[in-house]
Image (tube, rainbow over all chains, first blue to last red; front, top):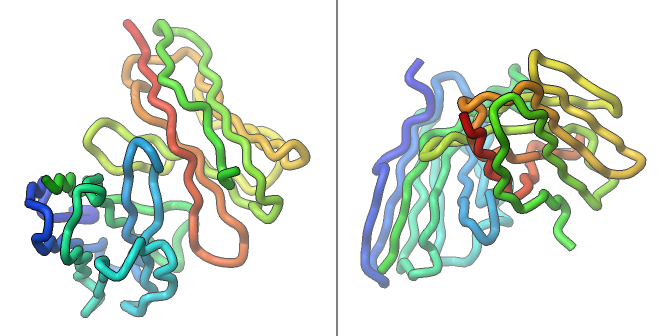
Length: 115
Length: 111
């Protein structure tokens, strides 16, 4: 298995532009998580899905952030409009119900820079 | 006070040293405890997990939990340069699937 695949690996954009981050979870995993990591705040959960349904989006910082999971093999995190304070590494992670609850499989992340 | 506090680091030790990494937490509902390891430019990966107070050993790694003091530790024996990474503690209650992470500590093991 190729693991969790995220794209792009790096994204540089200007303030006000729309940014879309993409994630392909591990096949068969029914939980998908979006995290954001910064030096100041560490790793923060933004939203998670179970069977493609959003379960908890309380970590989404504001309405500029939205996430979708149209099917079991694809999810997007969109920021519109982007701001410099959104600069961070965004991770997608997945796990299966039958697996160890603690074992999240993370992608390699998207490094986002908003100028 | 944040729910999970982790020693800020960074930490630099010589090869072969014993390393102690620590986290404290304030939410007594946390029941499940983990350590994740994150190499540079990679996502975190699960290193160890435990559900109970006491020690759990896996090779050179020992995870220790003290629920009465709300304190967890990770010990690394005979540290190697390949152990150089950021270590994040994480924990969850039994009620849902959310993990709460510490901010992480960056460890460097000098050859």
